[in-house]
Image (cartoon, rainbow, N blue to C red):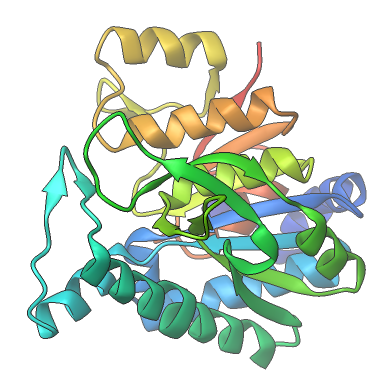
Length: 282
């Protein structure tokens, strides 16, 4: 039976054991891509994460905002530069990153969740020295940070008090320098640090596509082989690598889903078939 033929009662009955299984557990949701541009999808995501919180699942949201950063940079006549698909961040661009990620986008997500009673709180990786980084040195990307540690105290305290943290992916080093951080990598590091049961990447990709087909289930060994052979490439590599890092840090399962599908988050978590790719250890 496909999700399209489900009756409402079928969906509820199928979801029940999953709700019981995950009550009290923590999910990290990384939210980005085209999902952040459509008003209806933004409202839908806000409702879905609020629903998870209302049924007893702890939720942490980490968001991107690349297109918005580029848009504001253009308006301010700040040149946008990419190196192998990754944003080069100089001091001017970093100011835009802070304005967009820790400011407008973060607070808009918080506002939307709180409309539905989600008790969201907007913070960034700078707050509470949460995301500790060093300068990314594999390529010259300017003020882009590599995560070296996560101080989970603030997040755990917010969750304990019933709040839903919404986190902008920025980090800080031991000298007080602020860095831009890849949102996928930040999500994976954070999920591992807080012992999340699930890490869900929501963007504008169906999941992991192999030979033109969506692969619903992958193991760590399969992913490493696909990367080695060039089958998984481009922007999917940092996503699956951060997924593997999260699994190795203790996350039970990682999901990559297409946020453009209505209620993809709920369908992936609460139905047997799912709608994206789940990644597990061996």
